[in-house]
Amino acid sequence: MAGAILVSQPVVMAVCSPFAGRLSDRIEPRIVASMGMALTAVGLFLFALLHGNSTLGFIIADLILLGLGFALFSSPNTNAVMSSVEKKFYGVAAGTLGTMRLTGQMLSMGIAMLIFAIHIGHIQIIPEYYPLLLKSTRSAFMLFGILCSGGALASLARGKIHSE
Image (cartoon, rainbow, N blue to C red):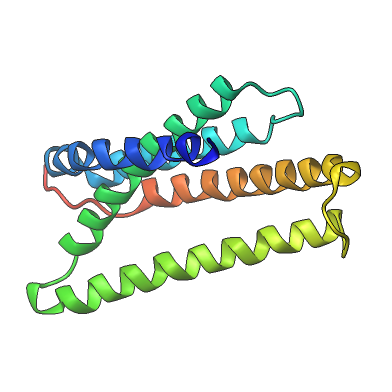
């Protein structure tokens, strides 16, 4: 059941990414990517509101919002990066992009684990400690929402790809 719920985010991303890529061919990729990053920040802030009685509908709707945000960011961001290098450097640019993506994922996981360690400590997660788990999860979503908001501003500030 949890897998079926969680798959809503990547399905939306897979469906919407090609459209976001085409959109970034027509208008500035930085605009589309920044909109995607902003939607992702909103989704993270909404997840920071999770509580013990959050509905399944809220969780699925927020996952769908995150999927749309990721789709609007990922393809246009890749477009912007690849458009900014000469063809002979495509391999290096793609490798650097992949490395940065993986580095970000690893750093995010490290930050999340640090937050869990601060809030929960070294204990087994049993029902009595669920409130601490929820508090740490909410803290992580809030921090990542703030970081994502900064990323949206940084994405918006980058140079133009299309000449006007």
